[in-house]
Amino acid sequence: MSFNKIIGQKIIIESLRNAVKNNKVSNGYIFSGPEGCGKKLMAHTFAMALNCSGTADHRPCGSCSSCIRTSSGNHPDVGIVRPDGQSIKIRQIRYIISETAKKPFENGYKVIIFENAEKMTHDAQDAFLKTLEEPPDNTVFILLVENYSLLLPAIVSRCQVHRFKPINASELRDFLGTRYDCSSAEIESAIRHSKGVVGRALELLTDKESFKIRAAYIDILEKALLGSCSEALLLASEKIASREEAEKFLEFSLSWVRDLIVLRENKEAYGSLIINTDNSEMQSKHNSALTEDELNSIIEIIKKTIMYIRHNVGIKNSIEVMLFNIAEVSSYNG
Ligand SMILES: [Zn+2]
Image 1 (cartoon, rainbow, N blue to C red):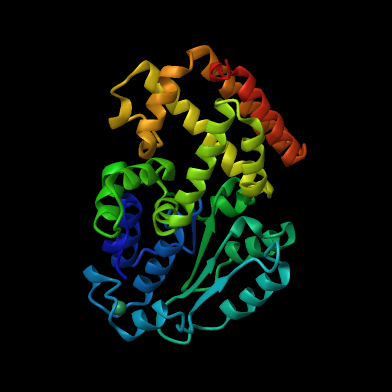
Image 2: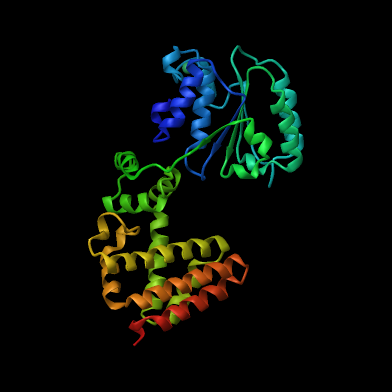
């Protein structure tokens, strides 16, 4: 692994490289961004660079003994803290404090990576803050968070914060296009659904199952639009059981109907504005059959359902009502 293998995040890489090269390393780092944006990969690469015995310009080299042990998870000075159950508990922090009080086993840095650091309990954060206030020598804490506002402000202010940016479409296209045996429409669709998060795009492409699920979602929506409510309900009951599945379905429905509206306004939109590029034919069919008012009403129906689900209204009931309402609004229904 080297920094060159990471897609995007050039500014962060530059900053971390310079810190290693010039030996100006902070005690605390916060890597903030959505799941799948590459925080973990960046943290492990940085940990490798910190202890690499390669030349200053080429750390991590990926081939020295330290690099090899870091990448296989066997470096004695690199530790990882993960939530134990729902949270990172104070006893885990106490253990880390006692470990970092000892000298590194080797000559480099002790690096402690906190996964889901926002899951530290309040007590754990308090204890950790005390360590950050008087950090042990040659120790680097890297906190990986989706949202750093959940950390105590005093922790944030003592760390160097790096916000991970969405990867732009052309970088993602270059990366995905050479690695996956998928049609370009599938790749384009994955890029748009990923919102610039590499992990999400990878998930979509590596897991062909997700394409099948999307096809089922479209089937449900189409049946409702055509007024075949009982078929739509039957399919929905097979495919959507959990809250998570319901949320995925609703998010997808929203983007799919939104695409119909974009297409209505701009028939040339396939190149840039459409999210679900892999369903172009079907979309143009619905687009010519539904009016703009109908589409806007359907968007409202979906949004309302999302709100119900967030307020813990029953999933099955909410989805059923949504599909009935869509069928009623749709002019396919006659
Ligand atoms: Zn190395």
